[in-house]
Length: 342
Image 1 (cartoon, rainbow, N blue to C red):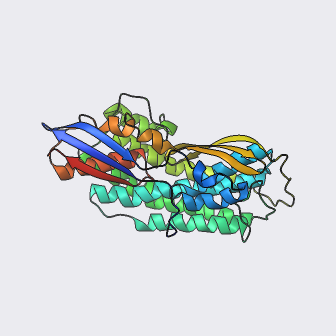
Image 2 (cartoon, helix red, strand yellow; image 1 turned 120 degrees about the vertical axis):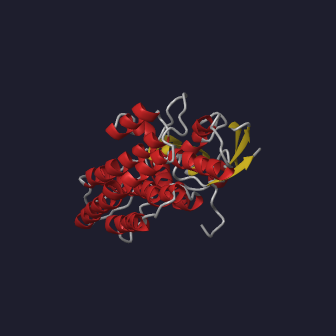
């Protein structure tokens, strides 16, 4: 981020292999247990302004979730157009995170040409949405601010990004990815007999492509790839749906109180993100965040379970398989991978 404020932490996965199999998976996290130390004593407005800078992962979703939790605590009634505009930003971020991994990281690991144009298009759309929705008005204000979205421009961006993601990803890259996963013998990588992880796989469990992959190979790498592809289509539709509720807002209610508790959950590319806040005398008294990465990378979570017992041929093949599994489960997190025992 360039400002030294990122408190998202880092993750590392250490693989111990012996006798041709993965024998142990150890996951280390430097993620802080609670952001309360950073937010305590600040005003809700200060927290909302800081949220996107403090977290490099899903900054828009973090901000939207924080706003909802703090608004609940303060008894703020948020106009429907403000909520809709925030939804467009959150959904656009989800789309960017999903498309970036599909167009850059999956091809890199599967050893064919990436599609950087798709990633650029989504990043450009995120910025264009914010300009068309809010102009010079900050959207990071509890309760919102009066604003007049350029609905025609928002619709134009939404239609363009739907066309581009279909052309670049769904109609072009998708088949290459499916073929590469299958040809590499990785379609069943990471199948777990535990609970379905929250996130794309759970969201799209019964989608035709996901169901077919599960039937053929179990809920492994190919099924997770299909779930990400299903997300691309669903997210562009959800953005279009949210634009129907956009309108100018000329009045914002004042907070009903200066103390209270609030909790909110929003969906991210990684899964559901939850914020809990307690406010006293207009300032943050306690703040807690439950991120999907915490569950995904728990010692007995889906990342560790999916790798246990994996057959090992060589270090590079193992490292690539581990990275693909991590990417398929959690497309946002940065993760260092270390292999020992070979």
